[in-house]
Image 1 (cartoon, helix red, strand yellow):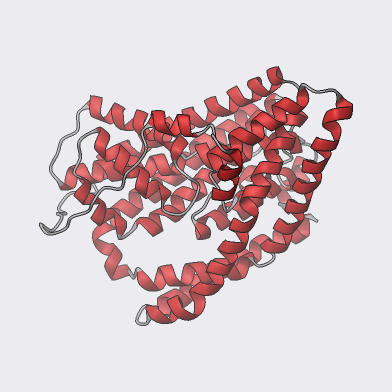
Image 2 (cartoon, rainbow, N blue to C red):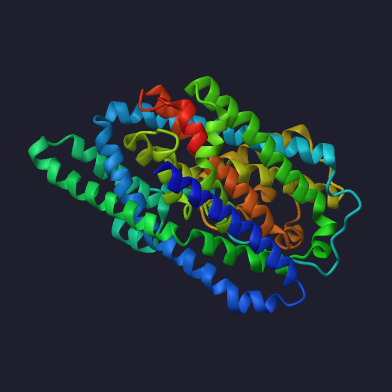
Length: 414
């Protein structure tokens, strides 16, 4: 079993590398990549999207019910939320520090005729209120993940308050549905190397090196920040709180990280994240089915880091000096705003308007970021997914729900 997973990871990496090479060869003819290659990537994404809602819904119902009692659920939920908020605040701080040191906006300017109309983003209060669905079935049909999560949690918690003879058939149904979705996920992931290849080629062929040069420092700052955050924060967390080797952790979550890099969707990568956390990292079904779907929606460390870099970058472009108070505002806004950021491609870019508005930065600068957002999205999504897994490992360890036996063997085979 481990050997097969190792082979899948290798195939995904080969698909990624081959996609970059082919994309470079097609830079003079990106329409070929868009017309003949990208549809295969779109098909892969559609297959992933097809299983997201039923997977999240069934996993959370079973996860909430399996925890046993509301008191235990509240304890695990509190740990999960605290971990996500603290690491997100740390991530946006790293982004601000790197942008201050590297000065990516120095020497750049936005053309006078470059204008962008800010997208409407909901306030934090609206986001929190909208989490509770007035029509849960509509939330399921629309794929509103926050509402799906809340409704699933209520169903799972409610089932724990009933006698076993009443709740058992209900829980068994969703348990079977979750297992079916895991099996479908395994089938879909057999296509991952092809999907990764088809998604990367159009990106590389469209954004050549010449186009990226003016904004290379922004890309560099975001990617370096993502690496620093993953290595320092997540390595420390799994080592200190879970006594797990960082090498084992990163090897175990590698399939999900690579998938996230190519799809730019933490929600779309969720099936792979759950599978990797359970099979490679030893996280129990109970913890994985609760922490990971929640993290795919509210944990956006990479997105927060990206927002910190981009906000300071645009301030530098416009010659605006941000005060310490404004930087603190960016940290708070990006941290809380991550709760309402959907785990789909490009959502972080929309939420960036909320951060810019919070400190009065011109929204016209979004035009500049839009040109490279897809490339930034890949890095930040990978960090989001790795962060989800690190939280699952830490919470599982704190609840004695982490299998850390045969550590040496699993490092070698992960």
